[in-house]
Image (cartoon, rainbow, N blue to C red; front, side, top):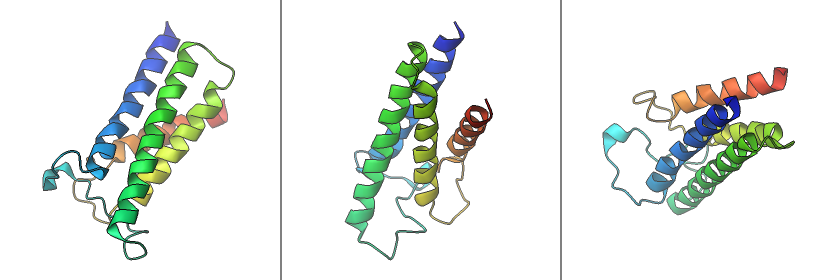
Length: 128
């Protein structure tokens, strides 16, 4: 039973990344209160806006897929599920931090809770 709950939580955590994929791909109209701007405190100024957009699309899509695969690993109690979940959380955390725009306004909408969840996952699995 607990693997069903854990896997479902990981699945939903992963599916949240689709929202940022939609924003990066500009499949939805951006509004200021959404928080995420598509700017990167690291990449803005180094590459073009199109380059930054493509990196965001790739990384948010990768995070989504990795968490979905991790959920299946948890549900089916596979031998690789813990390692994949750690990789998923690391990729997601890297992506959230990379695409932080430097402003703390709307920090929740920019992925702060997701980052906390990722850090809990990494810590919990690293110590177990």
